[in-house]
Image (cartoon, rainbow, N blue to C red; front, top):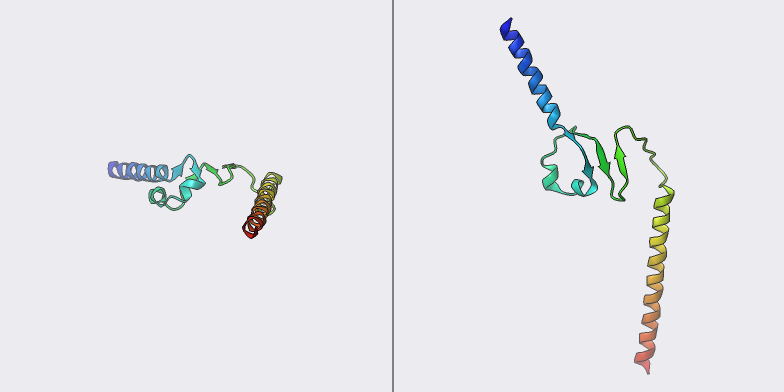
Length: 104
């Protein structure tokens, strides 16, 4: 009987220690890109909080909607696109101006 209780206790402690190693408080997108960080993470590790590349935080219990981006993400993309267009127009104007100068 004593051997069975000892075996049961050892088994329980082993399972508890294995599960304790498979839990991470927080994970960021940058961590997911670091191979050295991921060498320490085992399969099926529970992640309590994840920070995405655009700084959104996802926690256990959150509802995630897959599909259309949020309005904030759309606004950011539109601003970046507008900035790219303005830079391209400015570059083209500069290029035309330089051609005029070299033709003089």
